[in-house]
Image (cartoon, rainbow, N blue to C red; front, side, top):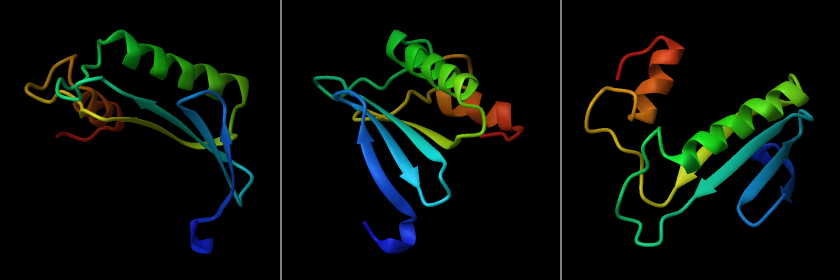
Length: 100
């Protein structure tokens, strides 16, 4: 890692869950979701996505202020065909008061 990144430590919690400890002492929580064929984008209502978001919420509640960011990544992208409850980027932008 580049020293300018401010990363102190990478902690692998499980096979695909990672905590990144920053020089600030705070963490970045990372979840990577995969689909075997990698072709069908994840929707916000997919069980894997919902469980990841729930986990992020639980971590923030258990350790308030200790996380600077949560990242949910995947190998197939996120569905964005319509602006509705299945479109995770749209929902996140709406929660932030932005429109996509």
